[in-house]
Length: 83
Image (cartoon, rainbow, N blue to C red; front, side):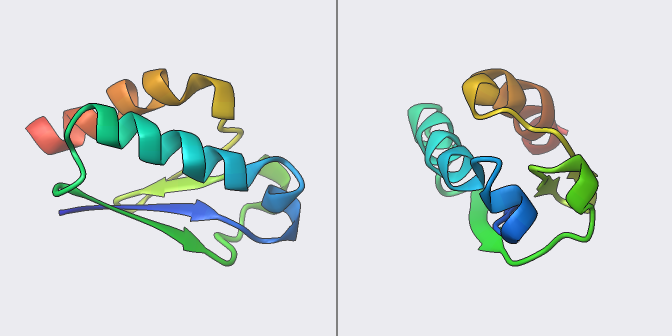
């Protein structure tokens, strides 16, 4: 199971982290990866200046755009599940 956390701290929240969660859920669901990905909200990932942040495994990725969730899943989630 791959852990994916979306920061919902104040800085990330005002930068649409809730929408990132919604878009990520849909992108994961559309690829039938629900059983392989543990998606959750996390209060703060400690990289506020780079937000919104998403933690995939142990890697924190900053400046994630909700408009690019399909690309994000293909680039950062699918390869970790295949590898």
